[in-house]
Amino acid sequence: MKIPEILIPIIEIPLKKNIQLFVKREDLVHPEISGNKYWKLFYNINNYLDKSPEDPFIITFGGAFSNHISAVSALGKKIGITTLGIIRGEEIQNKWQENPTLKSASENGMNFRFVTREIYRNKEPLIKTLEKEFPNALIIPEGGTNKLAVEGIRHMLSFETKSFDYLCAAVGTGGTIAGISKFAEENQKVLGFKVVDDISLNEKISAFTERNNFTLFEAHDGSYGKITNENIRFINDFKEKFGIQLDPIYTGKMMRKIFELVEENFFLESSKILAFHTGGLQGILGANELLRKKNRD
Image 1: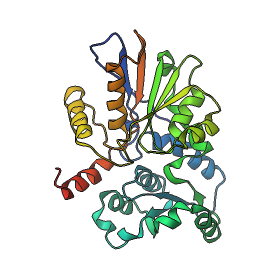
Image 2 (image 1 turned 60 degrees about the vertical axis):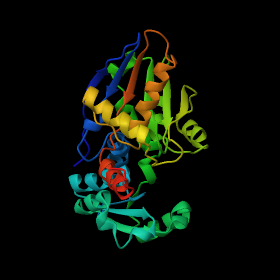
Image 3 (image 1 turned 135 degrees about the vertical axis):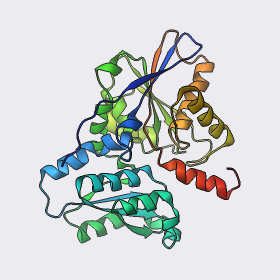
């Protein structure tokens, strides 16, 4: 069974400005294979299955609350392939059942290996070991970002997206914004909102897209995974006003920054802006749990 293509709705967010803002609801692509993760995996998985591997097996990497880990586990269950998650941080090895992301991934059939943060940062020796141990496996990088993932992002663009002046997305590992940049129309400006404090992202994205049509904005509030009270208020207010749930790590930070740019008159008059809702809603449970532990519920 391969991954099918899916059509996604575009919803307008009314603004009291002479510009138009829309959201493409990629979060609706699948309840568990969330948003851009679906398209990042699209060619990786389908090309792998085209080779008819013996005993197909998928290995990938992520942190304890990783959207990518969640998506790969759900995909493995959906198409009947065994999955293995290499998880950053051996300190959670004996208590992962308390983590909603890993618990759900395990219920989807994913097995785990927990490694130290040092080993995780220097993945090359680890990957070589995994290749020897599982020679028939498909090994997908952290966040799913590689050349095939960037190609898959083309499916987030369509005839409907061609009329927009700005295309916006949150940026983690850079694969999604690279794909949007690569397949955008010549007249379109691509805006990426960084949720990680990574100065090398511009170079990484450029290597995949080979175009200079994108601009990156800082939107991480100081570090990846940081959840400020301002961001919580914005997400709750956005849902109440527009009926769309954002996540606190990616789309909430992106949309908050877009609203700030609107107020600063960054966008030209009569512009049409399209923001991609890249999912990640599974992370809300983990975020709420962390906030409760800090007495911020």
